[in-house]
Image: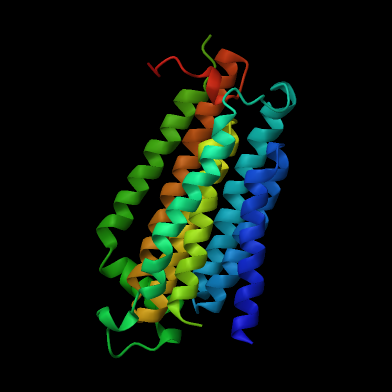
Length: 168
Length: 99
């Protein structure tokens, strides 16, 4: 059962990711990326990380993709449609380089042995992904990075406002 | 399911995103492909978190998501500025700093 869910969600995620690359219209690419992100959220559920799945759907497939769709809506009708490819060799070179990367990665990932990794002996999988445990670790051990993150977001907000402001 | 399945799926997703970054010509498409790559990395992190029984991978995914949100916002603002100045979204036309 778990394998069935994994292969279904994995196939949907991979197919949607390939569709993102294959579609010529950027609007369709964005829509299939939403599908990809949602099925990855399903995989998070399968990995017993329900909170991360919820965040993935709300923040990623929700907020960030809405931002993308807004910008596509603003710009795409005026951008003259599909851009002609000036360098045809990239159409061959891209997939070739991707396949080489996969060929190099595959044996390594297949041979990876979990027994070599350090383990914390006492945590059960359900307890690890629970909201309580996440909050305890995030607001205790990772408090400083969490606060620094807010500075990053502030910088991003100011940067976006400065960039997008119309020079008069 | 063992962790190797998840790692290989993650590698496949990452390679798809990387191929997209290499041959897509639209700035917004490039940002979409970068999101795929970030997600592939996140999937690996969550898989390790599950199979090692440690929460740190999920915390890291949290921070990756924050950085991705900031990156998407700034990147899209740059795309808008590029379009305003050049009347195009093609990366081939934005080569002022290339050589």
